[in-house]
Image 1 (tube, rainbow, N blue to C red):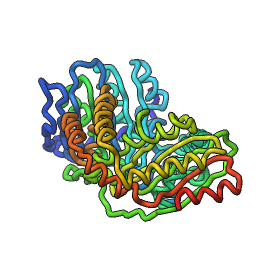
Image 2: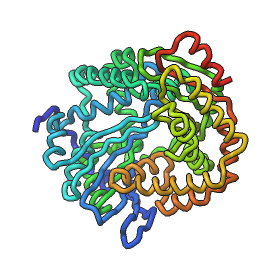
Image 3: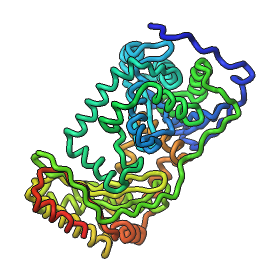
Length: 459
């Protein structure tokens, strides 16, 4: 193991041993599925879900920071920092970090989103103490050295280039810009070539110190685990790093706000020499805290969530105009998006857009049938359960729930809430969301006359 700088002295015993608060949020059946939460002095929250029937555990730390927290000059800093936390700490080199998990067959990764960042490791249950030690060390002891910043810059620029080479991915960034413009939600999570090249170690280090104190973090762990042991191990790791600087600090609250999107009928085109035209037609959606989100989930599933959905049937099955066509929703703290994606031959982009627009208009005016809604409710309930069949998914659910909502909902309660959605609720949210004038983003080899006609799709 390589030593990279002097160790940090732990806080005094009076600060370190202040009282923690523990509560049971969801009481499972026979101990299975029990969700517990402990808030440590200093504001660090630890949530766990117990699943004794498995032999694995997933440990993650969620940071209350995403690309929407960046200024224009800092665009890409959150994602850059995600990379740098793997580059070395006071006690581990980058090789030490990766080798520790590889040696036990573990998996370790991270992801950055618009409103949060997550670092996680999945290991055998017996190796959980190692995963906790390594991930906590990364989050509390990163060095952000100039040489690492310079080396990792090349990797991030390659990641940006890889995304730009995939128009089916890039078109969603373009659509975010179409809807949100040049504010933080409209800028790419990865940043741009110019902003990444301009970021230096000092600026990233300041960003790290501002957003990675314990009050901004949620620890989540799921699998064959013991809550009290996880709390003791996490607490010891943070105390060793001297991370609890203020034992009276309280966790920050979930994001809120009152942003109102008023982007209607806007069209953005990006010319590329691709075999397909990639399109997203959409409009403002719902914030993730909106009570109508359950009905919106059913509506989205019925419209473009599977092979029996309206859009799949009309665009692909009946006409063969696209291989991939689907709808999706994105909910943020104070706003949201609804979009329809399709990839098709450039010569057929107008036909595809007309069918999609006609279907959206028809559902806005007339709603879905009771059979479609019942089928979507069943599909959504089934996919919800199937998507939570591993410890990684469980860790994601409890970690994101604590960070974004400040509360937990059991799987049974989620299924009951979906089942309780009524046809009238679905039709009401269809009128409210789909009745808006859409905006459009397109990437592809479109000629001037084709591009001019695309404005008709949002007229």
